[in-house]
Every structure is written in structure tokens, then in C-alpha cells.
Amino acid sequence: MKKFLIVGLGNIGEKYYNTRHNIGFKVVDALVKDYEETFSTEKLGDVATLKIKGKTVFVLKPNTYMNLSGKAVLYWMKKENILIENVLVITDDLNIDFGKIRIKGRGSAGGHNGLKDIQDKLNTGSYPRFRFGVGSDYRKGGQVDFVLGQWNAEEESELIERIPTSVKAIQSFVTAGLANTMNEFNGK
Image 1 (tube, rainbow, N blue to C red):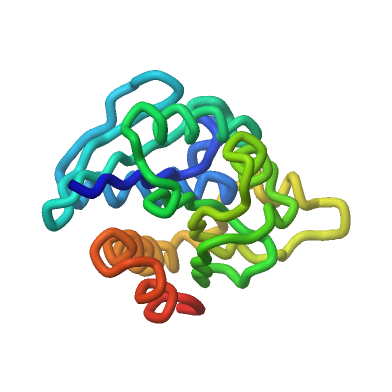
Image 2 (spheres, one colour):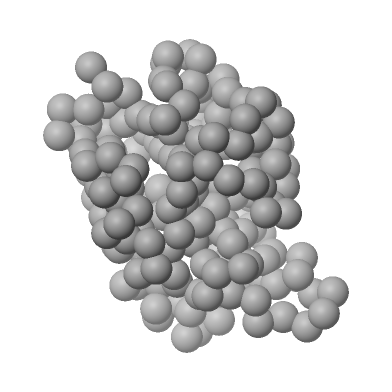
């Protein structure tokens, strides 16, 4: 039976809950809710187990903070014997317009410390990643404040539509594969 690991990146704690940097958590929360499951606190993160068309899907929200996410990803891959091509990491991206999706099978960390740590721990940049655009509407030098800032009212209203699209993209990754998912969802 094929197993998958879907990882939503974010930072734990109430003060980070509704920030742009936590879009990975927000997306996987919606995925788990759609399947009427819940997360339980396990080693190195909160984990939920879903069945999607006969496939076992582990959904992980690392509790290691964003910059140390690789430890949790590697642990759960080994624990559940999940192949790297069946891992999907969901994160924010400043270089993509707000709400746009970019899914790739490999790539660089692109300046994202969470992806950099995962790449370091896995010893490769060849793992599927799902970048959710948060835009770049910040003043020079304001990048950290922007990603750790709360969504504005307009973004909040658009997330109501964008989150379900993101959930469909994850479901497609599990059921239709990476290439089909990229073709259908990239740029949406």
C-alpha cells in the first residue's frame, strides 16, 4: 500500500497562528478537517492519518519551528517508511503572487529556511514541494515582519477560495501523481 507524507510548514504558538508564514499549517488543517479527522501530538509534531482513495496519508505539522522542520520530516519518513517522491511539503513563498500555487518535484530552498533545513536533513533538494504565494507587498528590509504578519482583510477573504483549491491540489498529488497535479494546479 502506498503511503504519503503531507507536511505543512509553520511555527507553533498562538502568536504565529494566522500569519503568512503559517500557510502550510492552514492548508493541512483544512485538509484534515475535510476528512473529519483530527491531529494528535506525536514525536516532533502534530500528526493526522487519512485514507484517500485507499492510500494512507500522514499529515504532519512539525512542532520544531519553521527553521528546524527537516528533523520532523526525516523522522516521519523513516518511521513510516515513506519514499521521498511521496512527500509533499507545503510552504509560503514571497516570490509568488498572493494565492498562486507552484508545485515542483525538486528545486532550491529559494531563501526559505524551512526548506533549507529539510534539504539539509534529507541531503537532497529532490522532494516535491508546494509553494503558496504570499506576495511581496512589503518595504525594503521588511520581509520578516511581512511573513510573520497577519493576513489583511482582503487576503483573508480570498483565502476562503484559495484554501479549498490547495486541498484539491494535495488530493490530486496523492491520487493522480506529481506531473498531473503540476499541470492542473500550477499558476492557479
